Length: 134
Image 1 (cartoon, rainbow, N blue to C red):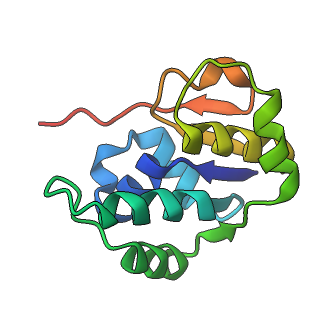
Image 2 (image 1 turned 120 degrees about the vertical axis):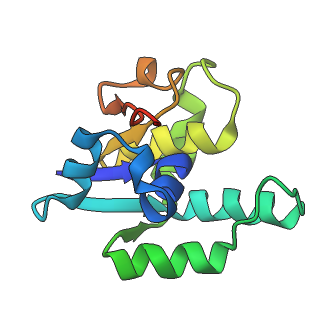
């Protein structure tokens, strides 16, 4: 199965895997699954990092290196996904999340997200749980 991680899940999988529920960690570790990250997620990370926010100390180069080292595969933004955004109903305003949904639908891939606003877009969007923090 092809699994596309939204930006939050990409960051959690790489830096804080304990935040992911057991089922999600199992799916990401399953060698039968192809785990993808979007170039759009790196763009989003680069924008937020470039703003210099003290609550977002993430280096996009390090995220890319860690994702590739982990065995995740980069998913480029193809024209079909970019155009597909226009066909999505206005359920969510975040342009990066909308692009990730369109990518999942165009590829196809199952989009893993912790954002409860995204599953109504498609049966390909999977809302994942967060691990209980103790």
